[in-house]
Image 1 (cartoon, rainbow, N blue to C red):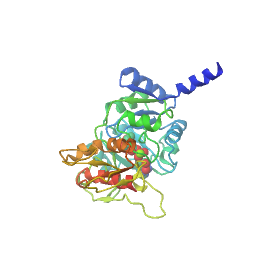
Image 2: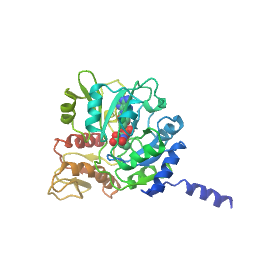
Image 3: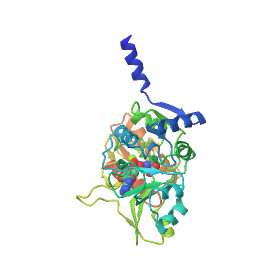
Image 4: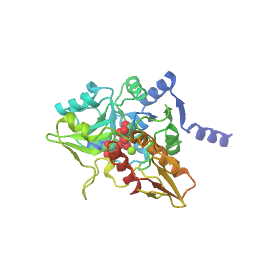
Length: 326
Ligand code: TXA
Ligand code: MG
């Protein structure tokens, strides 16, 4: 009897995978209000969302991911008005918000003194990373829970970001209560992260919103700041050299596969996984992490990836590949 009881309680800790419905959303909102972390789709990747104002809930995110506590979290809000209760938006930040929110742009902004965000969210920094996601499920969850939601990508720290509920389960099964399943995410790469400053915009992580578009809206130069200077603390995950990493060795700019390699290709080439036969970089970005997950789970010992043009979102694809290979 006792053994059976133990078995049951272990079973109950398996992660529920729930297709989107009003019931599933209401349950997710209830879990979040109760201080739990729930995996949720966004337009970029699945996030592991919890109440950003609740220190215990934020601790649950760090624990489930095994994330180092010096790496701060992105907070998701429903609109600019909610953002302004948490951070100070300069006129340039407001112009960027008007142009790109809701959408895959995260801004690192000065944290307001009266904001009620749990200190662990910002890892002690005087700034906070905010974005308004453009996914109906995440938007409804913020509204229904009535809280700003801290949400890093829903994977073990350092691993490949999840673009499908299956990826979340593969990485976090048993470590979280629920994943809301809305199928594959549209963009497939994490949001662009910028820090608007007085005379320039610092680009901390390239992503779906390109640097040129940001520069045009801000009317300021965009300065790439994705490489970490020796001895300084990392300020964005892109600045940790090894990140988004599969467990297998990864070779870049491969034109053909060695016998033990799983080849991720693009265009008309023989390969195990084609990112986009039409060489469409948006399509390639949306499929990149699924390709890496599949390659990692395959019987091949190593992974090779074909060269990808570094134009438009190709800049972000190459950034993720370089760090996956590091
Ligand atoms: O698309 C995305 O941004 C996804 C979805 C779920 O929204 N989220 C995501 O979160 O990629 P995460 O935690 O994996 O990456 C966000 C990074 C953090 O690792 C951190 O380094 C950086 O944003 N960040 C957060 N707060 C910051 C701050 N105050 N200053 C500089 N960087 C910050
Ligand atoms: Mg991440």
